[in-house]
Amino acid sequence: MRIADNVLVAGARVAGAACADVLLDRGATVTVYDRTDSERMRELAARGARCVVADEFDPALLAGVEQVVLSPGFPPHHPIAKAAGEAGIETFSEPELAWRLRGPGAARWLAVTGTNGKTTTTTMLAAMLETAGLRTAALGNIGVPLVHAANGPFDVIAVELSSYQLHWSSELAPTAGAVLNLAPDHLDWHGSFDAYAEAKAAVWRGGQAVVNLDDPSVVALAKHTDAEATGFTLNHPERGQFGVALGFLVDYTGPEPVQICSVDDVHPAGWHNVANALAAAALARQVGVAHADIGDALRKYVPEPHRNVTLVEHGGVTWVDDSKATNPHAAAAALASYDSIVWVAGGQLKGVDVDGLVAQYAPKMRGAVLIGQDRALVADALARHAPGLPVVVLDGRDDAVMTEVASHAAALAEPGDTVLLSPAGASYDMFTSYAHRGDAFAAAARALIEGEAE
Image (tube, rainbow, N blue to C red; front, side, top):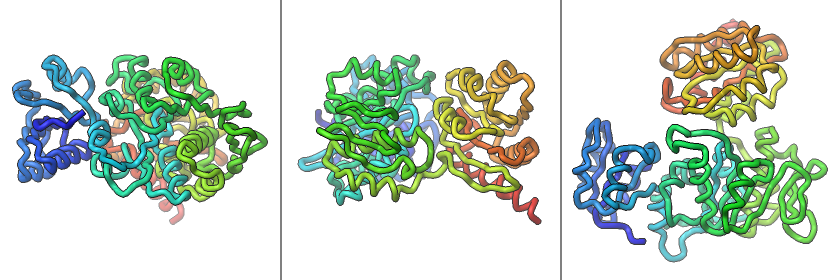
């Protein structure tokens, strides 16, 4: 479908500003709406965009508009989305726009979505493609905006896609797409788990589905797609699957099983990352990447920060930054990795129940230090499932609270323990991002330890 001549772009951060830039380059009439003014808004105005800053969206801005491009933060119930729908105006996201901008000979897309593990899997996949000699990049929620790379110098691109982006897509159809896992998340945005899962299924629109056979929700979702499925499992694979056998990642989609690499070659460590590696391998094989290149890429892979990363060991206590765990499903993967834990948690739970996570992992905890908007909900769950556990609840409202977090965590920890920042919630209540949260935690931990060493 064509790109319209008169487009409204909602949001002027990275994705929205990139869309406005590209549309202006094409000669479109562009209106940009945002609640806050910024240097980027002023730059777009200088380029000829009509820039509107207002707390409340005025539906009159849609007069004459043929298409609306929504940044990821705008849910279906937002006044802009509702007004556009009522007016019959087509609405989509930045990845959808990038897809429509592709010209002849454009790169193939291999897409990754799921509740957790998207960035790790996408960057693993990009490493595999690069090792095979293909011109590639990891894009989408990471790296350069897709609209700037739609016709870039690439053979294949590894694309991370969120449920938000997929919800606002209709034509986007990657060569192959993987759904890594599904657990309740972003329910405040989608309205229900079913709607959230349905958005994820759009990644299979191109006809080739990579499916986590160990996740019942993903398997159930795959039953409703017409795409041809390739499964991956942490168990011994059957014919047509990727899996693990005798300590090796194995591809059994051919006549005989083929060993890719040792489980020990996958890092960061943890079975959830072995699953990520299998998903990336399954996608890479869709475009003919050799098994040897996949194995070499995994052995050389450098993990992204804030994902179950050991920061420092001191006095027998290990400090770990897993700030990327922005929901209970992600936190569970880290909590499962250690035997005795001082848990640093809290933030924005986004309408997701933390009770099951706490019930499962409270027996492994030495204590907990809680921060953030929904800290009381986590504290209540700990009180129900571990009434004798020492719990410190902090009321700090910005990154300075991490100094207190480090002090209290160190007081609770004993030799052999892991102080684990794995919040199970989003970071925007107190920090600019999960990276900001992780950096603040790392700085506080190192400052505490250096102070003790003086």
